[in-house]
Length: 359
Ligand code: ATP
Image 1 (tube, protein in one colour):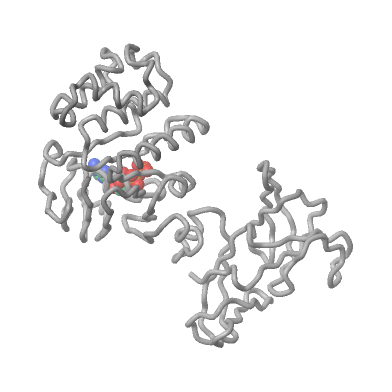
Image 2 (cartoon, helix red, strand yellow):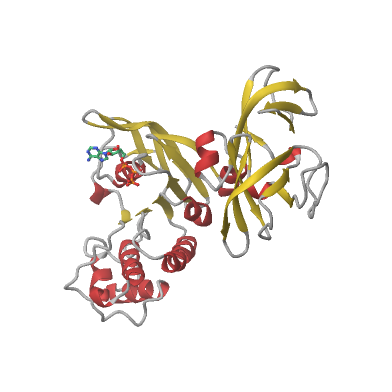
């Protein structure tokens, strides 16, 4: 188990800069995830930690020691990629044992005992004699994970290990990965483009965009306190508004968007400045307007008195536990999550000042 650090790491491929000055630190035993859209530099970062690439500039450290030019085989890392890459002519047991070919099993254990332990841990106890071809995609990834973990790596590197699986298998496997990671307390760097997966499995998350880290934090921080428009919109649905500050006191900030004044928490912006803020869809309360929109006509739910907007529903997506509405307000799109499907397409929306976050 080691702590990882990237310090001012830059990576160029010819004229392409894949990473600009990336600095990150991952604690011992932490489950740390890199999330971001395709091409943002996640895999490059993981390959630099694996020793499959060397930085153009900057330093990679394991427990404070510069390993930037240390070859992969001397780094004690376990790597699992998207494509299972199991040896088809070897059984499951032989595949896992292969992970111990260059490293001894933990002290006091034979290779056979270690393989059995890993197979049991990954719920593959019955599968040892099978060929990989006779396993499902999810089982094959469990074998790949068992093989990577067999020699007790200091660092586990997982690059989109679940992206080839269907949604149900992905959820099952991510629970197993999280359980095993905690059981072994192995420092883990996980790469995914799936923000929901990142929030579900990680101790901390780094959101990447265009070769840079936009924000690092716990899943709750990233979701509740996004610091940039990119993070606010990449992680979960979000409504980002932009407007000029009309009034700013110690108690509140008043911001004008379109022809509506919104009362928001205090911030350090000055009057006249343009600011951005976001409101999560689940923080907007909605009431159907059953009649012509008068003051409080037809309200069925409690909508906060402040920060009102009358919106038109454009599309309705029933998601089971909630319904997501894509609405139109003042030429902008606004997303709302509500418990019940509204009967009309005109909604009165509102939110409490405290739920808005400045970007
Ligand atoms: P994806 O989710 O699609 O795998 P990613 O976030 O992992 O994307 P990277 O694969 O790290 O992104 O790529 C970052 C940038 O570096 C991209 O613009 C990519 O085209 C470029 N790049 C990556 N590897 C190479 C290479 N070997 N040669 C040239 N350019 C590369």
